Length: 149
Image 1 (cartoon, rainbow, N blue to C red):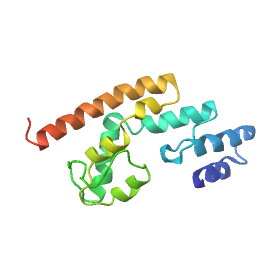
Image 2 (cartoon, helix red, strand yellow; image 1 turned 30 degrees about the vertical axis):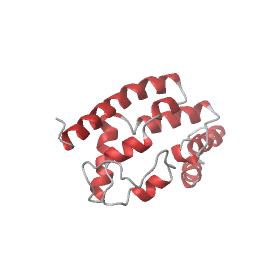
Image 3 (cartoon, rainbow, N blue to C red; image 1 turned 180 degrees about the horizontal axis):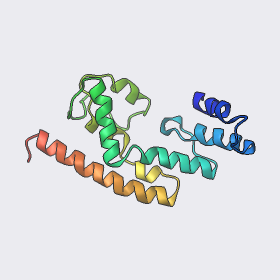
Image 4 (cartoon, rainbow, N blue to C red; image 1 turned 90 degrees about the horizontal axis):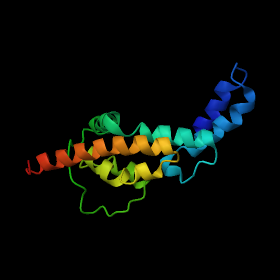
């Protein structure tokens, strides 16, 4: 992974304790949601959870809209009929380029069990609160967009 190698390069010959560089590299390698790797170290678990928490809550909603805004996509659109769940997380990269993609779709397809995938108790607690906020937001958005409210 490029970021793990880059971290090693950036930390080598600095005041950072050199004996911890392998742990930093391993934590970086283990933190990706789409990597299929379960963190094996405490550092990896903490980084994994922190990375996922960064996708949740109000900041997570804002980021989703930044992504779709960059591609001039929709504020809201339902999951297209040709998309079947469960979806391979790698397929999201392809879907993100579709003109009918929206933050609602990403939330529905990728975030459903995110709080349960956290690796620490603290991560799970924080994730559930932030996930609930996002779920309430996207439910309200769907209801307004579809004329239910």
